[in-house]
Length: 172
Image 1 (cartoon, rainbow, N blue to C red):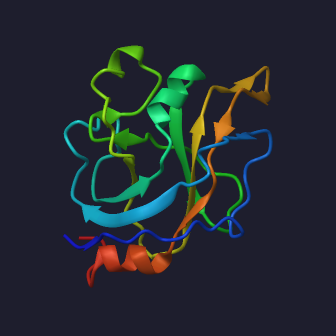
Image 2 (cartoon, rainbow, N blue to C red):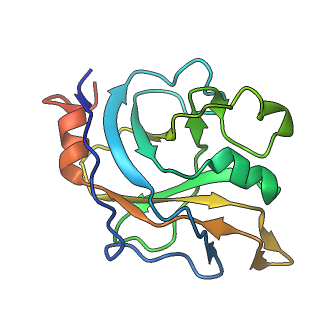
């Protein structure tokens, strides 16, 4: 397993545009890439993660995302997409060292002392490409309209970081 670690890449806002109808989160504008690793499966605490060979993407922010989600009573999701693709095709869950990050008030005590690092999974890509990702907090839709949904800055996971994590063989 290869890791591209101890690398904190600058935030790239210009390459991706935020989704319309989403409210930018003040204070969650510092989401940045820490590492990209190829893993055979998700960590045991990360329930709901996709199966099979995956890219585990670790990000960092000074904002306590779980606390923000509790205040705004909303689920937390990551919106990954190809950087030129515009709207994401779907979402994936966000995890910290305790498991899924969300609006669960019972999880507040066990999340105390968060290290500010979070991770999510995407399937291994056949051909590395730049990925854009942002964190979304809130319900998002009511009667077909986007409401009470907050979104972080959009960060870029460069194709070079993905290629380095994949190593010389694709996918395993």
